[in-house]
Figure: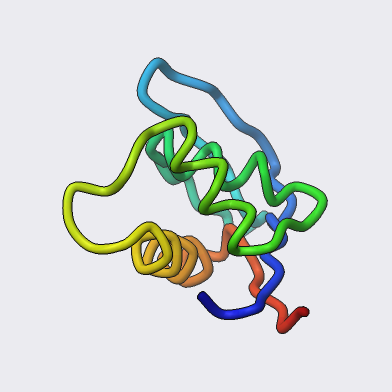
Length: 95
């Protein structure tokens, strides 16, 4: 897995649900409401102060078990990439 640090972007508001959360990101004309899964919510929580990709993978594996197909590293990378596309996290090169 890439040596990278994931940081959650600040949320305007968040409503936790049984299966994840509804989050408000951005403001004004750029505000968006998104529903995130329980796994994505855990990533956002873990990355609040910045977290290494590998550390996030270990925590997700411990909480949710292995992905149904592929490796945990690939699954975390794909999820983090999608969260970044949605503006929920930033990925910074790290060591």
